[in-house]
Image (cartoon, rainbow, N blue to C red; front, side, top):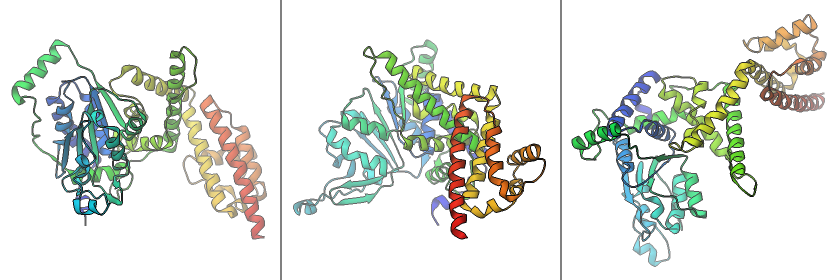
Length: 438
């Protein structure tokens, strides 16, 4: 049995309290960085990487070291990148005997490959050849060089930089860092006073927390966030999933419009959120709920998705995401659109059941009345037709339900159109299957 399986975390509320205590301790050592600390905890819970950018001396290294110091039982690989370095700086020295026979084999002991955490300072000082070699390790968690293809224990990397260097390779590297933050120096005299206080006590070095969190526990929490644990579940409702995707699309639209507006030549948009990133946002939602001690994702968690879709520390980007969130939320809330979204999505679940089991179309539709939300569908049938319909009228009932459904806002209207398409595809597939059986 693994350490992750043996770990007992208690309730999600207890987990949240422990993480909150750990974050508060870091916040006392690294002043005025609460939002970046929360973002970093989300990166660790989702097993993703974090890129910190700031001018020299803003405390990036201290922040990273203090975060990693929260956990015990994890190996930390530290390196300051430079242009002269080769991939063996990160992967371990080459086996000279293997090299003589033309085989590139790294001795990975003590390297980033065999570490759970990594801190790469001044990452963009590394040359493109070395950065390209890092891509598969950061993304697939595998060392793939020459004939060597081995799994890595790497969980999360925090990288720091004073600047961004744009090239084909560095753009691919940036894509590996799901979380990004810019740390701006705070010149407020009181903030500087508090920083000076901490420096007098710790001399700019990371402090040991009163209690460390076992790395095995972090792995366990990651399993919960991924939906892979058997002892705890953080659920996401169908309507919230739909709301999340609409919000992300709205943000993508606003970013592209903003880019076009800023261009004097009126060129097209180029901001793109990949399906992979959009799917991983669900892990972030569960991590945010966990940090709040909840076992169900709430609408307010969606408002924090700017942790991966925007750069924390850049007010303009964060404000744009919040605008997208607020716009969609107000549209659906003011018109009771969430209720309609729930009904339509539940209706698609009924269609999926019918598609999977075509013979359900030969039975009374009352079979679907057990669910509380689906009961609204059955109430509509009784109101519209007065009684349970004969089985040969099921198609008419399903079509009429959507015909009578009046959307209250554009978001619901678009969903209804998709559901109408799904209904017709389902009816065609069911008809074919029933004909084949006869």
